[in-house]
Structure formats: structure tokens, C-alpha cells
Length: 123
Image (cartoon, rainbow, N blue to C red; front, side, top):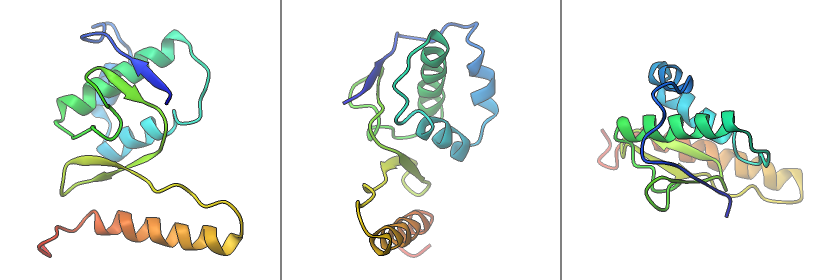
């Protein structure tokens, strides 16, 4: 598991804080997903992840899928946002092999994401 350990509160001079405050939730999810598979580490990436974690928490989004413990971000798998639950959930792993399997996976993910926008009660 690739993780980032974060301090108590981000530095007030963190340049990513105001940017993420203005960013939509899908934009925050995209910012997180862009970090998956990135194995490099520089201080700017640390500040970005810290501001991202802080903003998701500030908006009271359930981030248990990417934060197994307080102030820890797991960078293992992409996620999508479920508005009904106000939560992030992992995308299913992409299958290896034939294009038909990948197309079926893409259709499944699309149905999964679309269903996330509807409550279980049908409202």
C-alpha cells in the first residue's frame, strides 16, 4: 500500500488550500485520482495531498476508502464520488486481457457511477 502521512494541519501558506477551496468535488476526486501511479515525491506533492485531504475533510466527505487512519492517504486505487452517501468509493479493478472484457468493465463502471447519483429509495 502506498500511503502519504500528513501532519496535524496544513501550513497556512500552502498554495493549494485556496485552489482546492474553489474546486468542485469532482475536481477534488480528479486531483486525487491523478496521484495514483505517481511514484515520485517532492515537497509540492506533499503540500498538494495535504491540502486535498484537508479540503475533503472540511467538506465532511467520507474518505474512509482512501484514508485508513487519520492523517493518512492511501494512494492505491482510483475512486469516484457518491453524492447520496457523501462518500468516496473505489473503482473496481480494470480487467486484464481482451478488449471485450475491458469494454464490459467500462460499461459496469459507467452504470456504477450513474447509480451513485440516485438514492436507494428511488429519489
